[in-house]
Every structure is written in structure tokens, then in C-alpha cells.
Image 1 (cartoon, rainbow, N blue to C red):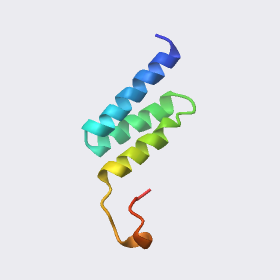
Image 2 (image 1 turned 30 degrees about the horizontal axis):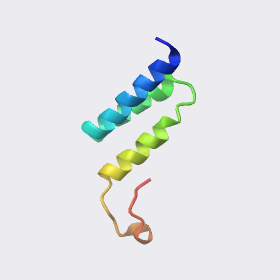
Image 3 (image 1 turned 180 degrees about the horizontal axis):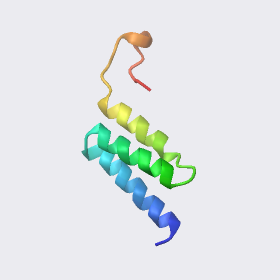
Length: 68
């Protein structure tokens, strides 16, 4: 398997885990993939998706709805 194919498979696995598992499972996989792959910028998109899915609306920060 080529390095690009492994990275794409890891991305699909990461975003699947963010969507279908609890937040800490996706965060664990993101942390592991961050140390396995060089320049793993997909962790930012996974964090944004996790924030969009699990963040509760709050009145702090001038009604800014996201936690990140």
C-alpha cells in the first residue's frame, strides 16, 4: 500500500470515527495519526467537525456558537 493510500484510509477512518463514535475516540485517533503522518493538517478539519457536532450553544464570547 502506498503512503498516499494509507493516508487516505486514515482520513476516512478518522472522519468516520468522528461521526459515529464518541468524541474521545476521534480525538485519540487524531492524536495517533498526528504523530504517525508528517504534516497531518486533517486534524484541524476533524477538530472543526467535532466542534460542530458536539459543542453546545453558549452565550459567552458575544454569542459565538463554537468552542474552538
